[in-house]
Image (tube, rainbow, N blue to C red; front, side, top):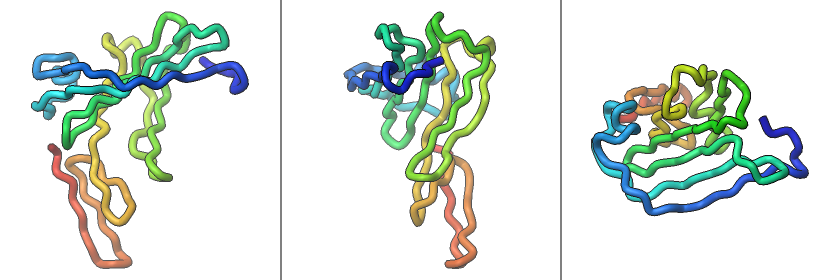
Length: 138
């Protein structure tokens, strides 16, 4: 848990890393079939620069995977995740860390329509414009 906004910090790094079929990401997210060639890696650190949580975004082209990896310094048993993309909650949930051997891995893919997020495999009605929008599962 990081508490002090004056002392706690995050580092961000873009890395070239190939993640292909057979990886832990593909084993967890069965509808992922392509290869990621780069990641965006965030490390949340305390005042002494010790990492408590690593958050990785994988780019699979049309799909995005999110991986949250707590270190031994992260003492909570639950990980509460709230992913917000311009004022739209995309992913919200509490995950029991004991259930996730390789960190919490989630599908962060989605579509945008009229500024709103639609999750893969879902549809959304827009009553004001009488429109329906659907987002493909892949």
